[in-house]
Image 1 (cartoon, helix red, strand yellow):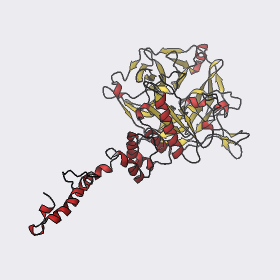
Image 2 (tube, helix red, strand yellow):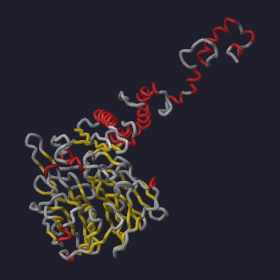
Image 3 (cartoon, rainbow, N blue to C red):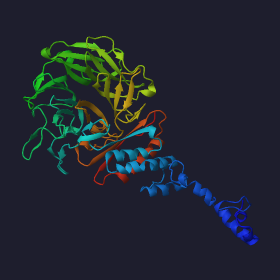
Image 4 (tube, rainbow, N blue to C red):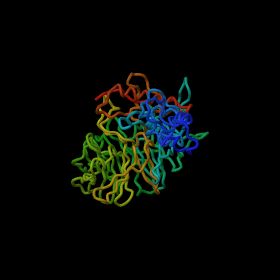
Length: 514
């Protein structure tokens, strides 16, 4: 029915009908031969909800919609990228100015989010997580290096934590690899649960590591606390030119280390990935030989017992649960697995063998602890250990570093992520105290290289204030250098636009194809 036919008969006339046809053409549309410059207004009004939906609005309206949300879309982004960013920008506005907010924005800046992993390292050394799964920084303060030209060390501090242990009183004992070129030197630090350095010296007081000044410690590969001893006894493992060295510190005398004599077979263990103390025995996980070395601490120089880890590929983590050990194993071409090993010896039993690959997100379990009788917490780095040394930023599979809960009660077991993505870089150690999980994060290992791939000396990133590093890993299969360059350009542009004004950014990645 036309507009004219809706009027009373007395008002109908050909002249008024011609006038109404103009409005009817604009508002509702008329099927005639006259071309229309735009769709009818009624049709546009019906599509208004779509105009405000980033997934359904027209591509030419995306910049307008982004401007409504206080975000300027950079040139060169695909339509899919623009839709994804607009859909997630309000959540990022709530976290703007934080590491998580910057990490989320950089994730949105790439065209295909499943083709790479983007990680922001703002220098968090010790982290903690509670039941809500949010990962927070407990210790970010590191050393203080004076400004150029002398750049001398004013006072030391944590730089790149590699391992973590817990005293019976709840203090954290952190093994640190130190900075590039030994500035500052490696050390072991005692940290309170409030994030303070527990040991200070001098005036004004500055942080002090455990052990004596003569302790020529290399990067600690593992630390383990004997909780049965009075106070505590800490065992520190580091690799010297003569092989593995075992040192001992006590609560009564924490600033004087004692070198513990060990058997020659123990000194030859140079690929240590974990260590725990259980019932007066130090258990050392040997990744290369795939075995547990059992050192009786009452007779440490005697030849140790060994437990073969048959069927494992590259064991990474170790914990004790009752009469069994739990070992986390990484595999280059498949998801990781957890193995149950009887203390008396015997064949390891895989715990996740029945879990389909889609239900097992574990790739590199660097730490595992017991949460309940049949529940484990697993700290996973998220990078499958299959990298070519010449192409370290290409991996078969990659995910954000995360904390997972493995529930062994159902059959098959259930693996669920309990931490939010983006809170960790390369976490290595984990302990739990009174419901809170504490983690140590050493940052990207390659950032500790003395020089970059082009031979330029690398800045001491995690030992300097106001440094911000962004690390990009790519999926190996199907990688093209053109796509990688475009991704790194997009990430670099977003980093320059959104980074804190005081931060000095570094982008760590590499171009390469499979």
